[in-house]
Amino acid sequence: QVQLVESGGGLVQAGGTLRLSCAASGRTFSSTDMGWLRQRTGKERECVVGIKWSGSHKVYADSVKGRLTIYRDNAKNTVYLQMNSPTPEGPAVYCCAARRVKSYITTQNWDEYDDWGQGTQVTVSS
Image: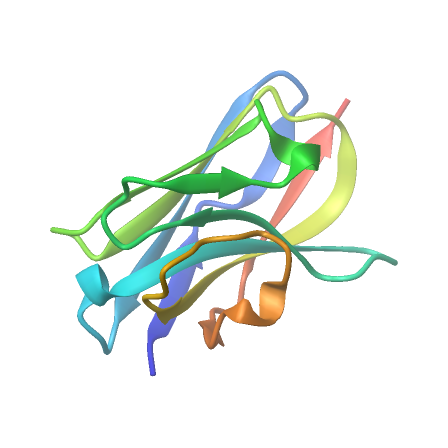
C-alpha cells in the first residue's frame, strides 16, 4: 500500500498557473506508476493524467491536453501536476493515485490505481 498526501490546491485565475504536489510513502516510488484523478461536482471521477514509474511515458485525457503537465521526481518520492492556463470551473478535487508498475499507462479507467490520497481542491475563477 502507498500513502499519498497532496498539497498545493486553492483558487487560481483562468490563465494563471498552479502546481499540485503529491508526496508518496510506503512502497519504492520507482516501482510505482502514478496518476492524477479529478472529481468535479456532479460528474464521475476520472483519471486525467498518468505517468510511468520512470517518467519516460505520460498520458493525458483529451479534456486536459495542453493545460496539465505531470512529472515526477523519484529522488523526492513526489509527483507533480502543473496547471497552465486552466479554464474556469467550479471546485474540483484532484487526487494523486498509485499502482504497481504495469506494462502500459492509460487514463481510461481511474480504478486502474490501487491507492489514492485525500485530494486537494482546486477552483479556477474567471
